[in-house]
Length: 355
Picture (cartoon, rainbow, N blue to C red):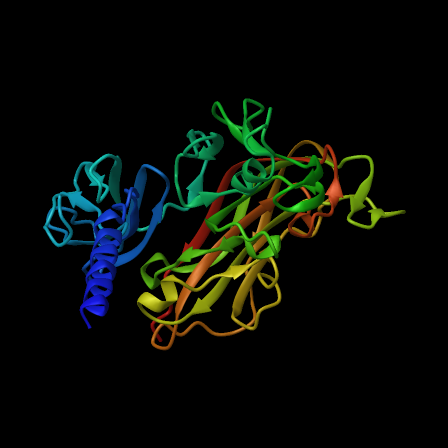
């Protein structure tokens, strides 16, 4: 019996030691950031920025609800009212106290519907890649960065001074792929730019782009999307099976309005590269049909074609805007060198008829 008690005591000491030696968490991230208000619409995040969209103009007394990494703390704290008339800086400190991150949080009233592609920045924790300053615009640059382990000279989606108006426009270029340890054989990387989010899925890359941002009723019924573009297709269309004989690469320019579940759950629902144009959730589309070469800036004017009724009493809705230098780029098909440049894009809306 005495021998058994000694063994139990040793075991208890061993387990206690393991528990005491368990390392504290080092993550210092904001996981989610929302506003406790009926006016809250959506949020977008990068490594150091949070952008919130409200349907009201008053930003002076908003109560944030913030989720951070396990064990981490944030200052100012979640649930404490803030005046967001100007940007507010939040600091997250990891559980072990050795790591911290600063996030700049800004609030806008409703979405803007004119996009001039003037403001660019860089994202990425270890390797940097070009991105729009507006975090609601995403691209597949993050996926290219991951596949190439940061060894990238020039990314598929970036700014260009070849602008229709202003200083910059958005340039999307289909680039040569290769064999990569992370994702396997990739014949091409298409340039892409879209409003929504991007969550890299190695097993099914077409599910990585998450298209759409909440489109509140107050922003009106989308009528048409306009803008200017140039397009030069590459010489040889290829996919994972090899050359696609007799076909020429084409670009993609389109917008889609689709329904989601009302409330917070709808915020998490997206269409992706596998179903953005085919899902039964799609209510309206505005699609560029002429996807051929354009040497000079050419205006597009795309009316929204409605496939169903809009009923905000039953659903919420998201609006997606998508550009790609190769229309099947989500499936790694395209022509190296295909280049799409877009500038001065606008979505025009009208008030909903209350009758």
